[in-house]
Image 1 (cartoon, rainbow, N blue to C red):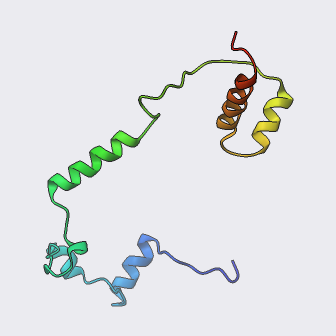
Image 2: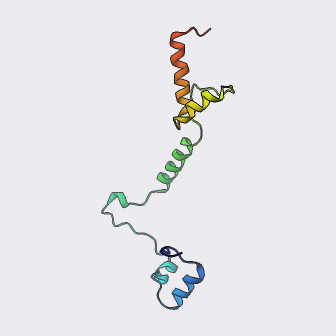
Image 3: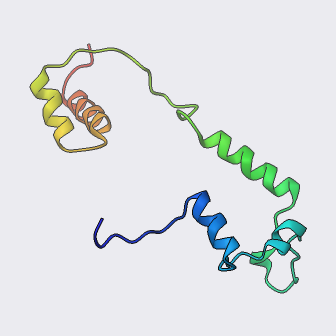
Length: 112
């Protein structure tokens, strides 16, 4: 494509670049597997301990999926298409807005 900028290489291109001596990767350093050593100066750059990593993973797992402890109940209900279209047209959150509209209606009408 004219004017497109290539941002990545295929494996054949990488091997050819390495053979020509144009690679910017220090292979000796990569193969040595030198571990990161924290200099102790900046606390933000300190590697996480195993316990901190585990706590972060567990916190992430807890926040996934549907919220727990909610007073909401899943149900199946049928609405007219035009009513659903009107709520959906306003974008994401249409179910929450529909719930608020029904709650507002209950304030002025008997629940029974």
